[in-house]
Amino acid sequence: MAVSRRILEHAPRVLAQGGKPTVADFATAAGVSRASFYRHFKSRDALLEALEVTPEPDARERILGAAVEMVGAQGLTALSMDELADRAAVSRATLYRIFPGKGALLTALIESYSPLEPVTEVLVRRHEEPPEVLMPELARTAYRTAGGQIGLMRALFFEVSRLSPETEEVAAQTITKVVGLLVMYLTSQMSAGTLRRMHPLLALQSFVGPILFHILTRPLAERVLQLDIEGEAAVTQLAEAWLEAMTVKEERRK
Image (cartoon, rainbow, N blue to C red; front, side, top):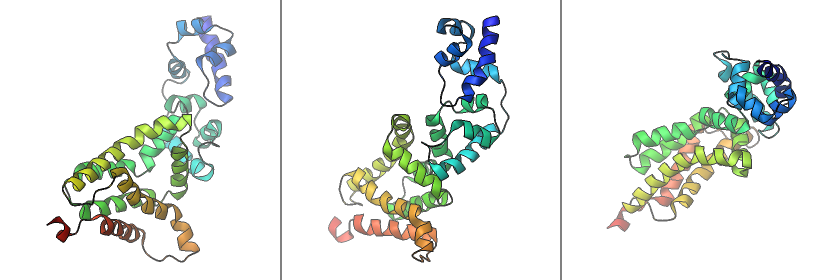
């Protein structure tokens, strides 16, 4: 009993040091062996659970809300988990129980604020529609989701594309599904003779690239270049330009 109490007493100091403390860190701070730690706590998560059994009901939302502002302003790499806990007004134990590290936080940010989930929903629901209907709607869905979070979108794009060890697995988990659905759709349309044949990933990049670029640079285009076209109308035009290049004309099908 004394061992478990000693671990619990020293754990907050370990959490306050930041980073993602390991079982070894907690055991060392308490002056016990890892084997002794595991005799009293089945895992690191079990310790965090013992430290604070019931986090506040809105703790996750507060953390994500604070993370959106911080990641949008400074990126994920520079984000301090300790500062995030302070900004969200939660304890470090609560933070690490909900998001054990930056990878888990990145996953939640992508799922909650990026266009991936809404685009996936549209694809699943409307995959039988022709490209001239579906593709502009995908572009508008992406804009509606991401348009208000430009700073966060830039940060997420950078973090995912740099494929650090911390984010590579997240990228694989969060992006593979929507890319797979899009590739399947484009491949089926190419096979049907609706879209011209090319590598489906290249076709997808040529669709996403201009739309993503527009979303990320729109504030600059509005303030400096006096862009005066509404956002959804702009991405619709970009989607239609892609369709013009990709659609197999009727006379070619005969």
